Image (cartoon, rainbow, N blue to C red; front, top):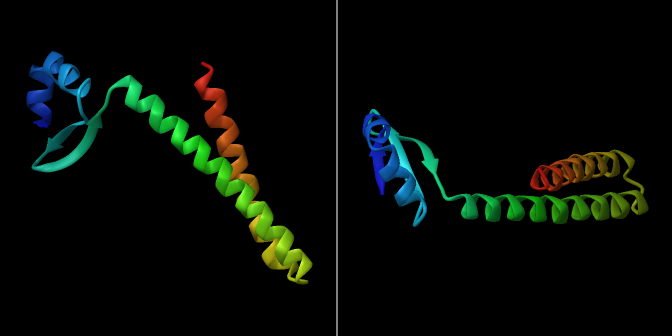
Length: 99
């Protein structure tokens, strides 16, 4: 389901009602600009993002260990930095869930 931005303003209740069932796309000048989703779906997406960020962080750290063992310090540092960035992101996502 989709609404133009003007329709969404006029029919906000309908947008919210539809979003409870499936994502609603808001268009402007014929192009998708936003999506409205239910809070349940939003929380599910947050959980997925945090999970995959955490998994990717672990993979980054594992790559760093392998690279270090192979005597590739630069590659190890890059992989470790990527893992650390993803770990920070995953922690932030988990902290935001508790708010």
